[in-house]
Length: 479
Image (cartoon, one colour):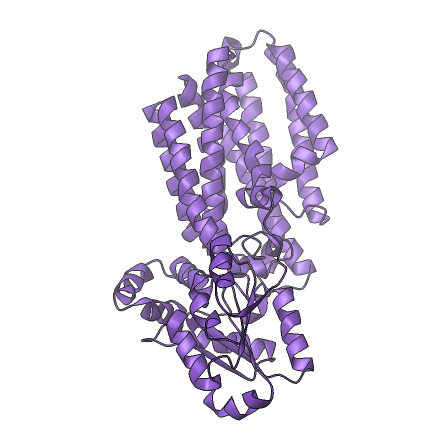
């Protein structure tokens, strides 16, 4: 940068921060989580690196990462400011606290910067350190600077014009007290809908599975409904915390997906640090509620969280193990509902649940893989499936679904059914409905008309809802 001092006499350079400014994300968090997701044992290395300072941690986290700068959520307002500066003939530089390797990748991808500077293994280029480097290069007041947080105050105090984006009220007040011209770029604040998207509130319907033991055992009482209501909220909060963790780990993979790239964290609509605080708070709230239900329910929820976490960091990358795990996670909800109200879970119900949810998990994998194939995208990096597996996955889905119907038919034929139903023969009407619904899901996925979770799809699909209604009426008639 020092070589550019002669240019700054004629036209004041524009210096742009990266994390939270040019990029609507925090690349230290991103690289650290990506490294942990790929190599969980690297947590030890990160801890040792952190003992040597934040710069060492940044260097370690990004050292072995296959970083893709093209997928980052760049801020349009900042890019527009850069374009205006270039039209005015002003040089533009990228100055970031991120490690040099990452900064260089971003600069090379955008191709709009006259130079760049970042942190190395020993020096963290932030705050006063960054300010000193820029003053050395351009002189005090000899550059304009775009930033976003408290660390940038030290730089703004030395620049000619301070430009802020996504600035908090506290930082804004401190900047206003400085004897420097200030300007603020427009940015979109996350709404409650954005947070609802992050928390996957549309997925909460899955937790209604807690009610299955209540309905199957015919123990519909106000007390049981209250207990299961608390359990439902507990599972919803726990699931949201896991969804946030999953989105944090899958940031780069989500950005390469046609629909997942619009998730709030992948798109930069919600700061990663906010998500990092939200996940443990949701987790804590969910387990406080679970403890109020019963110790056994608390233990089941803890097992659910452990299994989902293992799925997020490891199991989802294992072919077929991932879908079996998903089937188990659905089934755990049924077990939790039974424990909450103190009833036994029928082996018939558990067996049926494993098969039907395995079928749904396989349909989900089929739909995801088919979507990527049709859009001519690469095979998923965070899933161990190939495009040539499509036919086999569809066959597995149909087989698992039809096996669930077989289990249901065997249950109707068994003496156990007479304990709960006076007219068990009415339950036979459920079997053709199940065959139709499962077959239709596979066909819809095959026709590329399903690009989302099949359960979420079913909640808005008229034919699926009609199937549920007919099956429900058959069960009521059998009681």
